[in-house]
Image (cartoon, rainbow, N blue to C red; front, top):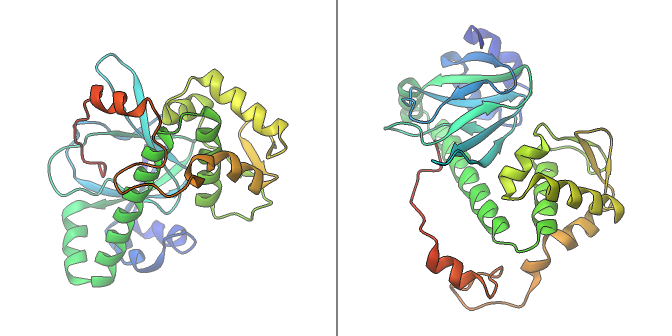
Length: 260
């Protein structure tokens, strides 16, 4: 990891998707350069910094006791992450591509700055709400019974978060193994779904990790099929299936803080 002085962040903040008032934080920031697979922070690390992706991408994941990896989020340019007040980290974050640039803000200094600058506090809250909403959408996606629906939803999410024109190819910084661990699927299943979506002319590949949406309507029809059912009673998830009650009864969920 290479770290540069805070003055160098200015040129990156000006063109980032979330420049705005968060640019005021630049006087506190240092820019760190990470190689692919390098840890930004690990589980159980102390919470000394907040972070923002400037260039590149990262993944947030956790390991089970038996060694299985669960990816809970992908972090793209402009995303603020790692913001939590006290305690230690529950997840680890690793860079996905070589040369990923991440701004690091000392937590205590950033908190004091937010106390005196309402616009910064507002943007930090918005970043937190956006992260929570994204995690909620991901939970709904995992409740879908069809692997094709999960993959289709994932592709739409990446395209929408990339802020590119609909006809442009989008780079996928993550591997198919990463996608599989994010969607709770086997990597072979992910590959078959991508091939099927290409066969339906919904997507086209421009390389191993570049995809273009050829027919967004067709992709949305696949991805959102379950959410287009008639209205349900309050408390009944639209994506529930006959197997869901049994799954809910037998699955124990331990509450965790998704922010860190």
